[in-house]
Image 1 (spheres, rainbow, N blue to C red):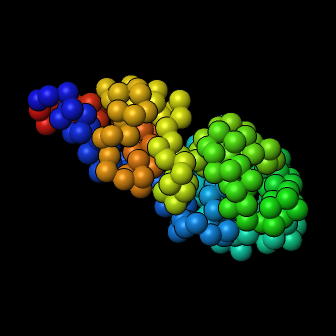
Image 2: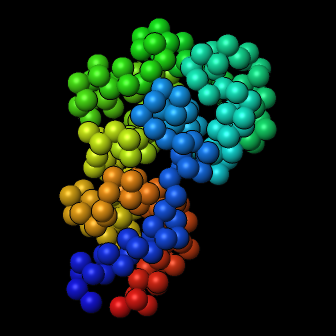
Image 3: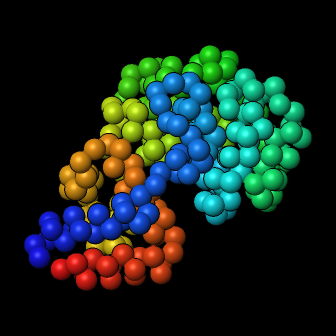
Length: 222
């Protein structure tokens, strides 16, 4: 099997077995609207901590179930209400600090961008590097959180695509895919699939057994 065919087989396996975005997993119906974009930002905040993705997703779902789906509702919630929601998602190691950061971030989003991340994008001139820099000014969002947000938001912000950060490219290399953004992006047919592939690669990179499974499945398909 030619290299390109092997790569496409690997991508197919990754998408089929692990290709669900973290936004989907958290119950976010991602759209270029203030509410879903803010929810993705909250999820990126939670995912960027040194805690399992499963717990981060569960905590995001609890925050949203409690009604904290917009910057205003997050700001109006008490600090303890946010801590309690995070605790129900078992996000306990970082619950108090994260509650504070979520409140501070909501304040900033409302004061600077009227609670609408599309205004952040426009302030950045729709330029990806500047968008990332502005994201990292938000409390709780460092470079890792900004990468998480951008790799998922490219589904609805096409000007960001293809967004493949170093962690995704490292994971691609580990499973035998190209570590270059252009060749890797060329293996999928849409920005949606690219976001799904990125999520799949991150999931697989966290579990050596999954990496071995994907490689074995690809060898079997030759």
